[in-house]
Length: 408
Image 1 (cartoon, rainbow, N blue to C red):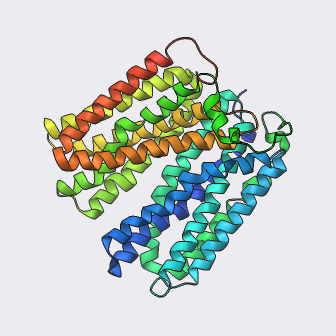
Image 2 (image 1 turned 90 degrees about the horizontal axis):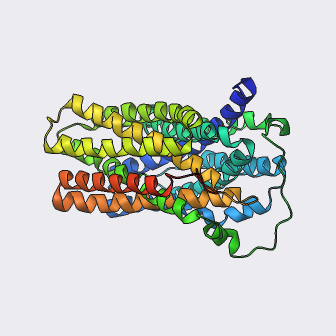
């Protein structure tokens, strides 16, 4: 089916939902460490702010509750509207508080807002799975990835500048209003916009297979290993990029432009293009092609610190290659994850797979810091190149033959 206005409207609806999740989260994650350091909080306490993101790691725990209560489009919309209104309400409430007076109350409210945002994400992902046919799933995943990159760029960049200009109390009400306005396209999302009517049978009583049944699917462990390995060849580079730029003498402003603006912009463009590429050449070919780009990226960074001149031009090229390959790889991860969901457990199974990817990323980021600290960036990037080669080799073996159930 050719792309038309109706499908464009569907994609815009999901883009609004995904970007509304990310912008407030990116803003709070960026501004809180700045405020706390200005108030002389210990670095150990500031480092603990990473725990605020735990709801997005643990959201698989309550994802079955969303799946079990969604039998019609109206049910998905109820979850999304409720979660987003709570999200916006908490953001508005925080605007009336002073961080100098009630820092821990504000942090607690922000964690609660992240729980609401994670719940919205479960319902949104589940609705995306049932709203698009297999051929078009890569396009809605482009919207998800663009929302993530664009939200990070706006929330961690533009809003940080506005915060310094107009302050906390003036900025947050507009942020809350934006979250509410992002729901408007969903209000007009009707049954006729679905690829096919939502059809769910009555589910059995809650049991452990709500979660663990995902791992009992035929051939599913191929997908699990793929999710764990696919981005591992560049996550360590992403984690150490900013410290490396500092070590090479670049200022905070220069790093913000190189990584925060140029890098994320390339990631957005690559994510958008990736949806069309996957739709055109198929999942299997795209998976191998993007894995090869990840390998090239890791190899380039090794050569950069080992042999090539390190200057603004070579760094910009590497950063663009890094964010571009990451944006493309994300589309394959999300699209194949949508292929591997059980009927009736769309939100749960997609959430489990994203958590596997996030866990792999956190683990690789921790290991990368230790490797870079002990042996230097060159050794880290060489190991990342090896991981990327293993990942490419694995998927060529595991997915190189004829299509199997759940994956392609």
